[in-house]
Image (cartoon, rainbow, N blue to C red; front, side):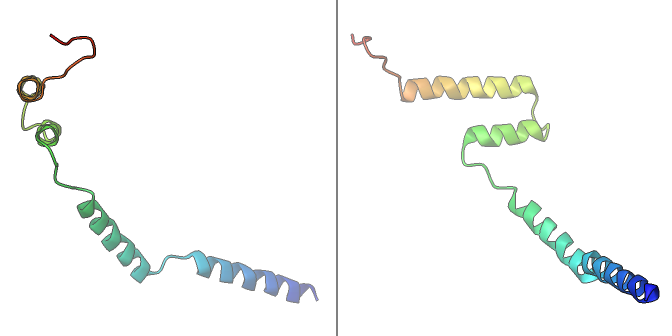
Length: 90
């Protein structure tokens, strides 16, 4: 009787290990899915600021160059779209 119980426990353990053991095809699919996800996560920037940040992160420009470029963008934006503050009417 004890031998049957031990054999049942071993069979249950074997089935459990087999159920969670990764198969080579699943591993290959996961790797392919991870590569596809990484490619999909690299969207192109929608604005000039996004392009500048991308250049900065890839170290194509220095932080000083980035600050100067953003400063120029802010000045250009201020000329094109001046901000009006309530109570500031002239």
